[in-house]
Structure formats: C-alpha cells, structure tokens
Length: 567
Ligand SMILES: Cc1cc2nc3c(=O)[nH]c(=O)nc-3n(C[C@H](O)[C@H](O)[C@H](O)COP(=O)(O)OP(=O)(O)OC[C@H]3O[C@@H](n4cnc5c(N)ncnc54)[C@H](O)[C@@H]3O)c2cc1C
Image 1 (cartoon, protein in one colour):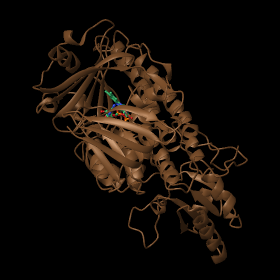
Image 2: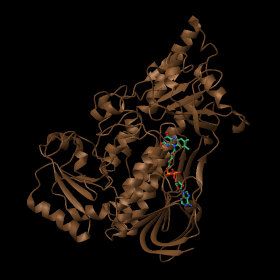
Image 3: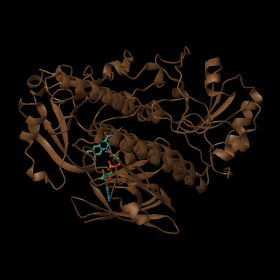
C-alpha cells in the first residue's frame, strides 16, 4: 500500500465523464496543472447519450478533434433519421430526415433541418457517448499539465482556508492519494460527492408520470447481425437513427448504434413492474410486429426518466459542480450531455484565468450566474418535449388496415412530425445560448430572440460568436470565422484598426496579463453580422463586448475579466 500526495494542483476534477474530461481538456490546453480522478478504469461501454449538438461539435472543433468525433457513430452513409412506426415491420407514420455522417461532413444535404436555419460549421452528430468518451480520454492525454487517475475513487473533498483537500483510493488496490488543489470541481454525476460536500441540493421535479419518458425505463443493448435483414419488409427499408414504435400495446425506441449490428432498445416499465419480469424475446417480438432476429445481449439495465432538477448553487467557496452533478434532465432533445460539455467550457477558461493570476476569484462567480439559467432553460425544454411525446394518446384503430386506421395514422403522423421538428430542429436551443452576467457588457436594445427552433445570429454581448464561412485565401476550404478565435480573448476588428489603437489594446492586455489575439476581417458581411467595429470574444467564444474602434481597452478588459464587473 502506498500513500501519495499530489501538491499544488490548481484544480482537482472529480469524475471523468463528458463534463470532467472536457474540463480537463479546457484546462490542459491552457497549461493549467490539474488532476482528474475517475473511478472507472476504462471508458464506459454502455449506451447513454447519442446526440451531440452543434454547439458541442463547435467546442470539439475549437480543440481540434471534431473531425475525430465525426468519424465515430453509424457508418458514413447510414441515414440518421428519426422514424415513427406502429411496429418495426408495421406502418411508417412519420419520418424526420437528418443528414448522414457523410452528408453532414460535406454539407451536401440538410434533410429536414433547413440549411439557412443552421449557420454553423458543425451540424449536430449522432454517436454514442461511449465512443466519444474514448476520444475525450485520448484528447486529455495530449496535455502534459493534466494528471489522470483512472480507476481511483474520490472518498472526500474538503474546502479549507488554504485550498481544497481531496482524498482518493485505488478501486482495485489499496493505495491512497491526497491532492491539494486551489479549486475542486465535481463532475461526478447525479450522486455527486462534491455537491454533498457543498451542502447543496437539487431543486425541481423528479417524479413525472408519462406513458413514455416518465418513470422507470429499461434499456437493452445488444448485437444483432440479422436485425436489418429480418425486419427489412417495412419502415426499416430505409434505416433510421431512432425508430420509435408507437401502438396501444407497447411503446419502445430502437436506437442504431453503429449502423451495422449494434443496437439499443428502450421501453418503459409499467408501475410496479420489475426488470426481472421482462423477457427481452417478448419485448423484441412485440416491437418488431412478429419477426424475430438473432441477438447477443451485451447489457441491460434500468434508469429513471422524468427528472427536471437543477442544483441551487453551482459554486460554494472553492468547490464547483458541473454536468449531471449540477442538473439532471429527461433525455428528450439530448440536453444532459451537451449541457454538461457547455458547463465545462464556461468554467474552464475562468479557472485558468484565476489560477494563472490574470483575473480575480470573483470571475468564478459568473459561472453560476451564466450556467444556472442555461440549466433551467434546457431542462424546461427537455421536460416540454418529454410531455409532448410521452403524453400522446394512441388511437385504438392505429394499426387497423381500414380507412379509419389509415386516417388515424395520418393524423398521428402530422402530430409527430410537428413534435419531432420541435425536438430536433433546434438551432436556437443549441446555438442561441446567451449569457447576461456581470462580466458581459450591458447594451441598450433588445437582445436576440431565444427560441429553440429559431436561431438569430447576433453580435449582441453574451451571445455565441456567430459563424460565417471564412474564404480568405490563407484559410483552408471549409474554414469558419470561428476558427480564427483563440484560447484567450480575441479582439475582432471589422475595420482597418489604426496601429496606435492596436498598440493600445496590446499594451492594456499585457498590463493586465490577459491573453489577447487580434483578428482583422473587414468584409461588410462580418461587420453587419457582428454589428460593431470592434468585438471582444471570450475564450469560450461568446461575445463579451462590442463597440467603436475608438473605445478605450482598459475598462473593457477589466469588466470582462471580473476586475470591475458591472453590478
Ligand atoms: C440511458 C441514458 C440515456 C441518455 N441519453 C442522453 C441523450 O440522448 N442526450 C444527452 O445529452 N444526454 C443523455 N443522457 C445523459 C448523459 O449521459 C449525461 O448527462 C452525461 O453523461 C453527463 O455527463 P457528466 O460528465 O456530467 O456525468 P457522468 O457521465 O455521469 O460522469 C460522472 C463520472 O464521475 C465518476 N464518479 C462519480 N463519483 C466519483 C467519485 N467519487 N470518484 C471518482 N469518480 C467518480 C463516474 O464514474 C462517472 O464516470 C442519458 C443518460 C442515460 C443514463
């Protein structure tokens, strides 16, 4: 047995799921000494989230691995549609077309998304979280300032006057570890030890009851070489990413994992029904409508859908929470994992700024101020979508081969098409995150609309920096304006900035120690989109401030780094 002490870490990250790994990447790319402790020695191999949002893909692109993520998931030409049918060999009721991996990469088809609605260099992507976590682990290993301890369990976290003390022990051994870090972040999921140490509770609702996505769910993860072949006589002639089976007997969802032979099927248990009483053969036969397929069960388990919970505080002293530790959603709309990554990106640069000495501790208060409202916003959306699908009542004649049956399917199909577009055609939800905190410049006038299905590109302070294709000769094909923005602050000038003004900004940034890059793009399209001569873009690529070229840099830089935040 050994006792090891890791001294002088800037940040201890408890938990290495998507939020912890992304936080490690955000700290690592800025050279912040940190340690990540994760109980599982290997990345998980069970399905969870399977929808990566445009914004998450943009974050991966900023760190240079969106292309790797785009390579995993279904085979490149497999449709990523959302399908609704009575049985897998029954009637197709509705289909929302989503571009395949190849189409999304080439931007050759936008399916039912509508091209104009998604001004982003990265369309959403469908791939299981387990594949992505493997990539995230590999990406973390690229950064020398990040120490990882996979297969270690954190036992305690304490916030002391001098810093935090985290103790951990080896899961498959007896060694122990003590970490002294300036800050500790709980990315440790719903049963967060760090949240407990902060004495912070979740607020909201945990017991929604619905026909689907409101109660105890059961997921079967299996391999089947002949599923597509056996069920080819029906809606699956054109496969889908999600195939929803809706009828009066049983509802379920078939999720395609690799596009070849790996799938997950989810059902909701009836009140009081135990998982042991469920026979997967019967479930699969009922959902397929008769034909059976060979399968090898890889894993099955239960989980609860219907949470709408947000922690009351994301920070207490030197302790923080992010991801599921801070909020727990119903999976509709794919909010949980994506909101978790967005938390990490928001917190990462702020922890770097404070621990590297170019911003005061007060900057860290903006993490709760900015992310808590977004957690509430996103959980409201997930809840509304879960109600929209979970409370649908199936007409008794739905499967009948009669004119009444046909009419029932047509009517239900229209409702489902509206629902699925509301749930998945959500550029506003994914790209429209806007912060209004003390470190974002106040501006008179109406902020852009925040509506899930409509994205309004805007240079309004707090908004995500909007995308435009960057066609300058020195940039590779397919480049985005976003690719020019750095890991620190970026001053985007949409006019030729006088040398004296450039020097002023550089000197002010150097005096404060703020990392600042300058980008000049004088095309009218950029100026019109960003709405100012100068725009200051934060390290998380949200807009901190905009103004005329004559603006003095010091007050602006002080505001956006929390030195003199607006009240
Ligand atoms: C069945 C299912 C389907 C889902 N579908 C979707 C979806 O379609 N879209 C979506 O966006 N989200 C979905 N989610 C939610 C998504 O999986 C989570 O929101 C996401 O994993 C949150 O990431 P996280 O890093 O915050 O937490 P987690 O992924 O839970 O990671 C927490 C990590 O902390 C580790 N840990 C915990 N305690 C300790 C400790 N004391 N010491 C060391 N390590 C510790 C755990 O081992 C774990 O690896 C789904 C979830 C489930 C269960």
